Every structure is written in C-alpha cells, then in structure tokens.
Length: 225
Image (cartoon, rainbow, N blue to C red; front, side, top):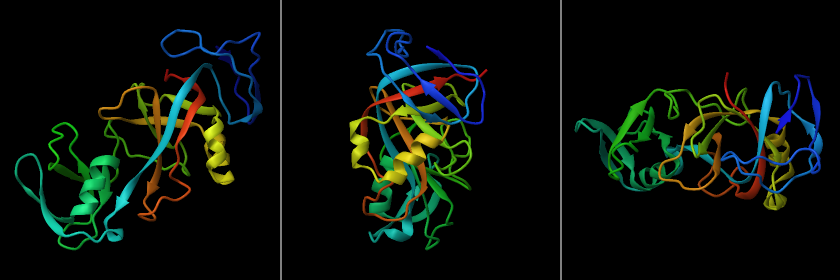
C-alpha cells in the first residue's frame, strides 16, 4: 500500500523491499518498482497488478453502410431505423449515435438488462452504468469501465502499462499515464480484472491508435470518501 500526499506533480517511487503490491482481493502480488512522474493524487491508494486494459467508444452510425432495420425498446415502442452493422457493434461497445436518417440522432444504448440481442433505448447523452454522463479520455475526470465493479467515482492511475504498451503510439501511453481516471461504467458478462477506457466518439470503422490491448498492467486505486 502507498500513501501519497497531494501535490501538483509527484514522483512515485514504489520499492520492492518497502511496499509490496496489494491486490484488490487482499492477496500480495509481485512487487513492482515505479519511478516516474504521476498526476496529482491525495489520500491513500492501493496498488494492484495483473489488469487487462482495453478501450471502448461511442459508435457513429454515419460510418456504417448496412441495411436499415427498425429498432424497438422493451415496451415495443419504435426507436427508428438503424444500420444492421451499427447495431451489431453497439451490442459490443454499448452505445452509438444515430445518423438522423429515419432516426432521432440521439444516443442509442443496447439494453444489457434484457440482453436479448434486439432491445435498445435512447438517451440524449452517452451514459454509464450509474446514469452518469461518460467523459472521454481527453477530458477532465475521464471515465473507465471496471470489472470487477468498483464504486462510482473510484480513482485509477496507470502506473505501469506493461509490455504490450510498446505496440501503442507514444502519445497514447503519455495520455494514459497523465490522467486520473474515474469509474463511471461497468462491464456486462466480463470475468477477470479488466479496465475499459472510454475514448469518446468513433472516428473510423478501422482500428486506430485509440484501440489498444494491454495485459499485466499495474494501477493505483483510491476509493471515494
């Protein structure tokens, strides 16, 4: 466990002989040495390793070309017409913005409560599991989805992005290491220790630098309150 006092920028030094990495289930994990600048922090943080980190986004229906089909909410009310390939991806990423062609152009969210492969609902904004508006990774207090679920507002700092981060663009790693992320969403049906970074609106149907997969990531966690 590590205690860090508030500062504009602090240098985090976690020595293997002095501070073992504490897993969130209470078990000791492999010790880690971190020597770099980290964002402003205050209070008591737990250090946890062995996380898989990926990204998710709001889909943009304008980027898709599939056939338009009608979509309904849980009560059978029509939500408009959306492209099939857009809807398939929305079941993975969770939500997307309509193209305003035979739909309202609002954010279409897949209904994970029913999880029947066909039921959605509309929102005027992109929301997380706590009915909070999601904040992209470039914003203030950016949002992440976490499994197993952590309390809303839990702060997460990436200490060590692991070897897979070598596959990322340098600016991606710099951005991830410079931010204090906040839990604003959860996973559906996921198992294991995983963090999904919300990167905002989709820019391409092709995988870009904002799409990443990193394993064995070490983080600092501070619970709200």
